[in-house]
Amino acid sequence: MISLAKTDAEKDALRKLLGYIANRTLTGTQAWTCFSSPKPEHLFNKKKLSLTFTKDEIDAFKSIKKKCVGKLELKHSRACAYCRRAVGRYGFGWHIEHVYPKASFPAQTFSLGNLTIGCVDCNLWKAARVDKWTLAQGIRIIEPIADGFRYGDHLNLVHLATEDICFVKYNPTSNPGTETYEKLQFADIERSTIIDSVNGELAALHRRMNDILADAQGDDSKTELVALLGKLKSSIYRLG
Image 1: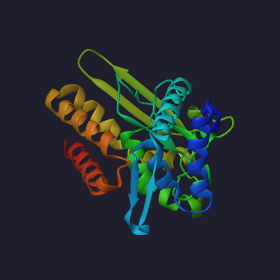
Image 2: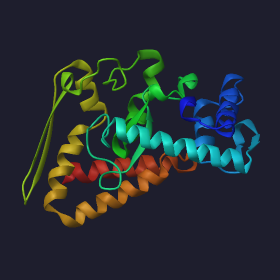
Image 3: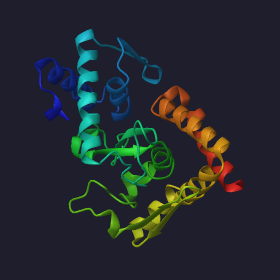
């Protein structure tokens, strides 16, 4: 990501966070919080740590993040790297996704080559069911940043839409594809797509929940809310 920092102020601000990671003042997750949600002071109560940032540093973080978002949108055609659903203004809410989780691989927190696009659903379930075990087990789901990666080598996606109904089906064709389908709950995506296309009220509720998830993910104070909404969405579409 340092390649996106064009001014001395941007480079110095990013190097400050990299230094905090290197000397273990901050974890990768904490450093990313400082970057993605910049403010004059960040308090990390478990470490009894208070870090301050100048206005120039805050502006630098915002500038770099904006450039990072634009680069990822262009590279990945505004689609989630895992489920391939459209994201952004005319699609689902999304987050910058660390393929190798920043909690276990802090040195890759600001590596542009480790970043991709993840919709709120895939981001939620990857954090809950994949990231915690990646350090010990490696990446068992698809690895969209790998050299020569082709989505079709792991998952075949069928997307059909008419005026009355929308249908999505994923067919895993490899072990990583199967792991992705199961751990990121693609069966729920298939169900929700059909149900939303024929039930406008439920579709509106789904969009509202996604908006809340998009705002809440990454905020440590809202971890329980994110988990609750994820379970609620899953329950709604399994009952539907």
